[in-house]
Amino acid sequence: MRFEHDFLFGAASAAYQIEGAYNEDGKGVSNWDVFSKIEGKTLNHTNGDTAIDHYHRYKEDVRLMAEMGLESYRFSIAWTRIIPGPDGQINEKGIEFYENLIDECLKYGIVPFVTLYHWDLPQYLEEKGGWSNKETIDAFVRYAGICFERFGKKVKHWITFNETVYFLRFGYITGAHPPGRKNDQKGFFQALHNVMTAHAKTVLLYKSLKQYGEIGFSHGFAPNYPASSDPADADAARHADCFENYLHLDPVFRGEYPAYCLDSMRARGVMFDYTDDEMAALKEASSLTDFLGLNYYHPNAVKKTSDTEDISIDYSREANTGQKRQYYYDGYYEIVKPADKTYTKWGWEISPESLIEGIEKINARYNANMKIYITENGLGDYDLVIDGEIVDVPRIKYIEKHLAAVKKGNEAGLNIKGYFAWSVIDLLSWLNGFEKQYGFIYVDHKNHLERKKKLSFYWYKEVIRTRGELIGGETNVI
Ligand code: BG6
Image (cartoon, rainbow, N blue to C red):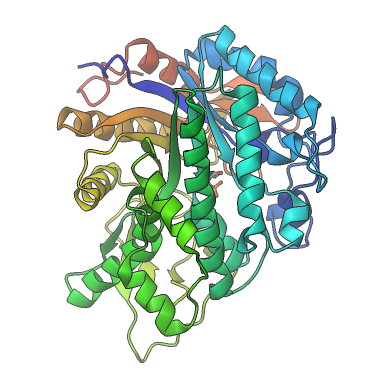
């Protein structure tokens, strides 16, 4: 069986991780431009100043995507290229770059799938409190409106935010992302509500413009399951799903927050401030958000902590990348790594089944057969190079298994409309530098960032050409 004709085979990236040219053509300074230069924050002092120089090489990169047969390319816009500074002036050079990129995609029939916010906030806003300051809501909606106005004729698929769950927890709780605050729970929940309000107001704005495209939200989706049959672990999994999944999805699809989380925030004195107008916007937008994007890499096995346990939260970079076992920041549970599971080299459990089970749980919670795009999924690895060829068989196997699960899920009635592999090309990992590779295209950092096709490039090309006919079957595509 083939995937349905309207299923999009895609791949993804994000501006800070690929563009480089961090101070060219009028671009403003982002929080990541500043944060990545703080000693100890990134692996081997890596940063996005040059990244993989996509800003200058986008034509070559899009040509390679076209050669692979890619149907859709998910990329993000750097807010700081569009509105560089606090005076709010629009930077025409920044607009021009994205116009060119969009045109280059369309030239080959590649559908642009655009993320408005993939974590690079203008530094001037960060300095005024970033997402914990309500002024950032209006600033974002204005920026989004400019993008709709300038690119909306050609871009018909929009994502407001990428993974609130990670950039906010890392930003306000573990300190691994900007603004680098540790255990600022009040700031965290306030920032979360402000981001959700910005999402809602952006959806309302988009719908009012009648551009006849779709707009959704990408969630960093790690379904939680109990590490044992102990009911305490089942309780831990429920708690984890509430704070890590439903706290981020309920406001988007129900226009409210889970009562369980609100009660807990109030009990801890970390409840956020909100207005009736904000809550009304959330409600109104909840029925207008067109799709759910899921970025799925792994599930989490969780174990309830006992009262006698000494819970010290690990703020190291490794704990934030999932390499180590870790306690949740409120001390309620620990993420463990059962010995009978398989893991990536970064300790992420490989489980395509959990994606489908997770979607079924989401559908049950929202009482809908949600329109879903897998907006990220892929394998971070140290790729094997033999005689100059990048033989990334583990990536092929990983993606093949996840595509097979998606296919099976759709055959059983799910409404998954596309799959975006992370990532289209090797890029900068926020906390893992250039060592953790995800791409179909290799970038040679020792040789002027030269691009080279990996084995997975040819494999994905064949998958797309045959619309996944062999996926999930007995015969391998390679
Ligand atoms: C997602 C992000 O969380 O995971 C991407 O949206 C990121 O930007 C990807 O690169 C993989 O994470 P990592 O830490 O393995 O690079």
